[in-house]
Image (cartoon, rainbow, N blue to C red):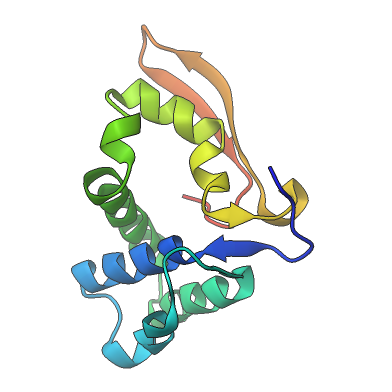
Length: 140
């Protein structure tokens, strides 16, 4: 992975966040004006993304379920309209893909202490139990 002095985020993540908010009817048009200037394959400062995430956090008294719903919608978009179907065929594939941080590092650049990581701590396929540790900015 190439590290950046300043953490950066791929425009695709911005756009999927915006589409998820639109699909869930969570943000008003004026709140998404920044997203109109985003290009999918261009890199942007992480702070820009966190600032739009803060709009959601400030708008709702309990933003955790809202952020979780946005994350679910983003993953649906990634799977259905992005590369997901080519990479993932079973739930366990997704867990391994995510906990290797491959998906995360494909849309965010920076040092692990700046951007965090996903780690698979334990996996019991027979019981269907996985313990995952995330130190990313996105805690759900």
